[in-house]
Length: 422
Ligand code: GDP
Ligand code: IMO
Ligand code: MG
Image (cartoon, rainbow, N blue to C red; front, top):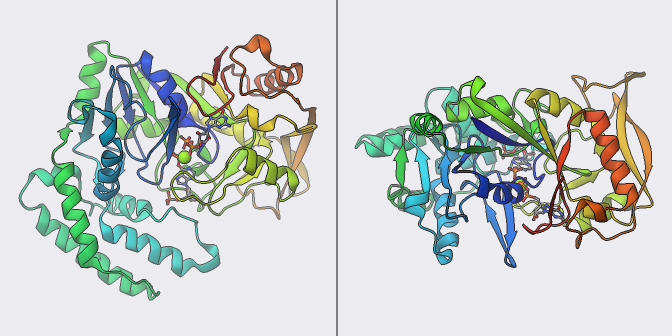
């Protein structure tokens, strides 16, 4: 069986931290979608690590890490990630395996991302500009280049033809994008050389045989359910399926082989980039969440928008993913709020509804809140549930009763040790 760990909001829930915490119980950690748009933060022994493409199990000796077929890889960013890991004495060649079917992000994909965003003006998606959308477009358009192509001599020809086509497309956008492709290509070819030193595998075969041997596998999601290409707040989404089904296509796992589904959420909500966000705060409370929670994008450094927990959206994500276990992150950030608000339904076109409607733009949706008493206690030093303030217990009990799924982990700080199992 393969267990999944998925973000239930708009990303940055704390997936990297929890995958790192859980890795001791698994033999294989596998990424199944997304790419360097992700920024997964892990903290232990006083050091903070940010991973973009490499799975968050890489710091453990026992686990193999697989970059699955559903992931898109930018060799240039990948090389930087490997360079950053250089000083930690990790046997990368033994522990990191790359799917031949994973698609490659070319320098011109990044430029196309920038051109597309520039052409949209105010209506831009707020993409991370890592070339994610254009690369998945080439994948589904059947023009893409894959890691496995690098093992065949014809890859440079294929690269040239695709890059030339992209240049024509960039011209077509008719926006002012300055670039020196020669320079970008030099970095790209250099990075491809490094990538080729790693072990490429037929990952669906590897995952299958590992399962037959009884190995324990954890699939690590990127982004969050509300950024899913089908189920997210389209068009303000990413270009992959971030939900449970994405793990099946992104690794080659049969649906019946999915075991537990760990759904991870913040005790409040954040979003980075454009798009509707019904419970967003523009006041002192939102400012406090951002400051105390240090809410800045791990990939782009942009400030994250902050707001109250949205149970309408969270329920939707729990349903779509078939979540079996919940994990609540960053409860510590809410310490000191006198009153907490939780959105329990929406006023949608004048009617009160409790499911996520087609359109959640502010002109159609107004959140309806339940108010709860906050807690003053600092949670960051707590190590067991018995030390929880009564108001935190009430908050947790209310969420469990609304979502009908137990909250199994409560995280009270960024460090590995600030993790309470229930
Ligand atoms: P991911 O993309 O889901 O892996 O999440 P990110 O790494 O982008 O963002 C989560 C941020 O919150 C990181 O800076 C983490 O170090 C931090 N973090 C994770 N869990 C907690 C927590 O329980 N409390 C606090 N204060 N910070 C946390
Ligand atoms: P992790 O894995 C938060 C957002 C971008 C933008 C939209 C589309 O760290 O949770 P893209 O570059 O994918 O075309 O951008 O999706 N986005 C994320 N937001 N966390 C992420 O990843 C994200 N990856 C993409 O900000 O709004
Ligand atoms: Mg992140």
